Each structure stands twice: as C-alpha cells, then as structure tokens.
Length: 193
Image 1 (cartoon, rainbow, N blue to C red):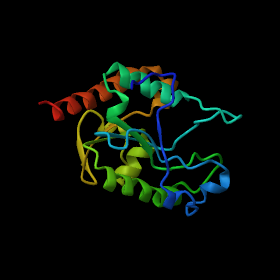
Image 2: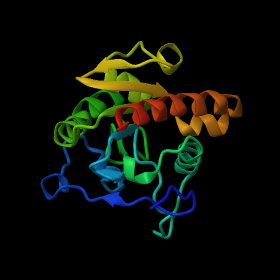
Image 3: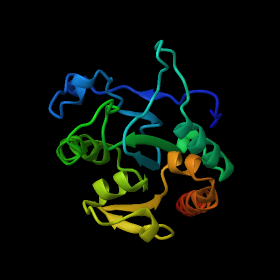
Image 4: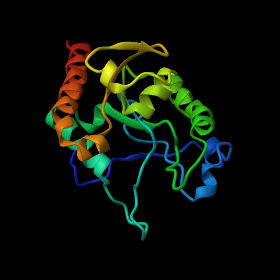
C-alpha cells in the first residue's frame, strides 16, 4: 500500500447500527454517510470537518482537491496509508445550509465512539471547524495552536490548516508541511525499537 495521490483510500464501512442514522438531519440533503478512510487500526487519526466529495455527479469515485493536497503532503513527510485513518466531525457532506452548532454537537458522538474503539496514538485536527469541535472550544484556531502537542479528550493532539485552505492559499503550504512533519516525527518516536 502507498499514499498514491491518484487512487482512492480504502473506505471504512459505516457500522450497520449507524447506517440509518437520521438524528442530525443531513440525510435529508441526499449525501451518503462516510465513516472514514484508511486503516481503522492506524496509529494516527486525522480529523476533517466532513467527508467532502468522494464521487463525481455520475457517481464515479474521485479524489477531490482536499484529499490530493493531504495525500501529497503526507507522502512528502513519509507517512503512508497503513499508519493513517481519516475521519470527520460530520459523517455526511452538507450540500446546503444547516444548523452548524446543532449538527456538529450531534455528529461528534460518532467520532467519540470511533476514538473509544480505535484508540489512536496521535490525533491530528485539520482546519478550524475540526479544531473547535474536537477541542470543544469555539474560540480556538489553528493559527494559535499549531506546532505543539495538546492533550484533548485523553488523546495527544496536533492541529494543522485544512488542505482546502492550503490549496486556496499556497502561502500556507510550507506551514502545512511543517505541521505534518511534526506529526511524522512524533510517530517515528513512538515506533522506535
């Protein structure tokens, strides 16, 4: 396995008990539930705000810009797919406006269940939505927290800019690579024999 930027990562199937979840209301927008991607037993859990686009309008699998940027940078810093699991605050991609606070407070329960089950060694929140939701603090941001480890919900947690922000603002690319290098170094330290 490798982190090829042109192929899709393995999708982790949504547990049967959650497939029909309608509590947050996003199912009304027509997007499907996406539980996560990569290796569910991985040491590193990456948290994004939502799954984004996994298929084009015709339903064909695709690799969106967010995933391209993330995967390219992960490959650059030497982190391969088998050590990574990507998941989301929201398990469905919002297609229209929604009550953000309410929906995030409902959907984070799925993430909490994943954390309890998977017990990653390191957590990485990408973007302010993921950071504020995971840290349970609406005032924190990536800019103020990047470059150091934080103990959040019992997990060693780092933050970095959202890959889409990096695509839109190339001046963030160096910081994004620095932050993922920071995670890669910690991962290597944990796995030294």
